[in-house]
Image (cartoon, rainbow, N blue to C red; front, side):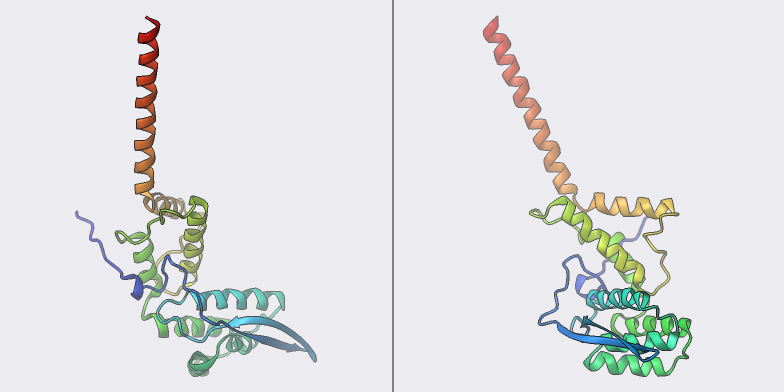
Length: 222
């Protein structure tokens, strides 16, 4: 059975190898009140300018999760109130509309965030990201001048963001699933085949030159 290759254009993917940098990022304080005690921290908020590429949004969501855990916010209503502060301009209004249609449990909050992400990516963004990262050709390639360690860390970051997206694909960072571990390693291996080819040719040339030199020495001794 032939495997069908599905091409996902980088501009249409929720994630892309080249990190999406935010021009003039907006920094503002987020806060939470508990028993008349205010916690406050300055964060980067998301304004929706990155379009379908939601990596900046996922960074904000990760920051939100870290702060809500640190502050001990374990109720849906508390999480909603804090998360809205990580959004500005149009995204803030969009999330408010979505949030109002959901209840106030923790699961309701998680569902509202998933629906909010899909407002910008379209349906099933995890599947889209999975196609881009693992099942397409000529997308994820290590740039020639990028160190292997930096390249590997970039893929690791993309795998983490892949798992944060809503959709019907399995998480790739599931350490209890050997198949997903192989999938990550194969994606890394396939991302620099040209480099490996050049290294093999270089080693072969070196062996050939060494052999010629050794033969020359043997002939001169004889």
